[in-house]
Image (tube, rainbow over all chains, first blue to last red):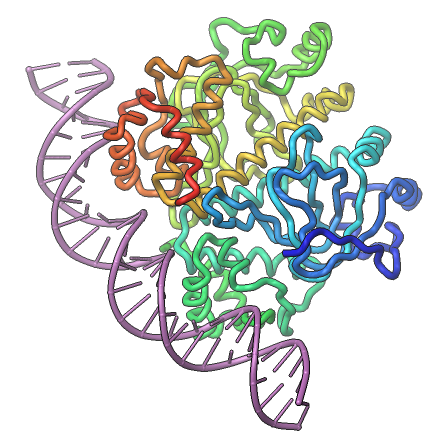
Length: 244
Length: 244
DNA sequence: CGTTAAGTTGAAGCGTCTCAAGATTGGTGG
DNA sequence: CCACCAATCTTGAGACGCTTCAACTTAACG
């Protein structure tokens, strides 16, 4: 994990043309609304895999929309264990804090090379004041992130490891599909076994065992940064299994 | 668990006089603001311990502020296991959904006899439109609930059972103290061993074993609806232990 | 005081963890 | 293009934490 390095991307993108806008904070509004909002953008950044975007306790002055790539958000416990809170995909909103007094409660790292759209806290506030639909949209985003966190908490707390893994992939694949990714092809998966293990609350070694099982059953194969789905239906069956 | 039964409480309370208002949604605003808001209230309800306030999938038309008593919010998995998401205390906001299209993603049950202040979704929307400070306050509440969920997820996923229990109590006691409860006295605890077990992700039997340990070490004693703290400092040490 | 619900304890089994060795993959330089 | 290296993943064996089932104890309540 290196220290945060932000570079302007080669080709800045206009919000109006942005391919993930419909999934993102700027989903509502007309084209003119959107270009007006863009004027308040603090910038677009490119970062490399492994770079830390922000860390627990930071008094970050900016909030971000992930435009390209994958981001892992996590918390580190006193004992050093890491819990992955969620995997952010293009269009996802990260780094928001309602109170700029306190530092943020979790960290975020680029899992792949990424591009971020940044807004300063003050500009974001200004935007929301002049455009209530953005405040409502923020409330919607917060709620859907909270829902995802509750779902994750429920299965991490209650389901056996194999089902947790199936649930993790089931959710991830659904979100990838939403973003137009063909699930029948091989997918670049910029998550290590350890990332996934930390997300579902098992050790990497045990993650390996259960993921071997799924591979031998021809359900899903994820290794060395690649993901190949063998039987999506069966995966969902395991995720929804009521006998576990 | 019986079906929802709501009765008007014997003595309705004005928001201005409400003892938990400073912790609640109506924290911001002048006295006149607050009585204006009260006019849009749908009602105050009393419910008994064990009654279900809402259930996963419900298209609830109201949102609530808990005025008195304790509420347990939870999710049930396909296999029938229950994960307690959080324990709501007086002043806490529950039942909110950003989209009234979909049903709610979790359930809520009264752990003790309770009193609720209710607002219809439409009145709440109207309130927020005419009073942006309420929208900002909602964003703040959502964020702090999401933060609590992330914290819970982290320790349920990563910490050993005894530390999880210490963390659960540590958090709960801090919130009770915030509400003016004297931690040196005996406290009425309307949570069963099973509620707590479902919150920290262990079986009731194992919860019993670790809670026996804490009792024998004179740290905390929680049984039969009563809670007595022996050594709060030591409890927090176990919760923050970095060797676990 | 008797009944019922709640909590405790023991013993055995299973799931997950730890430690350690070995295999596979992707990247790098010869 | 191949050989080698480092990183990632796999597998085995043993230990440990948590679960299960069942019997027992304690507290609350009428």
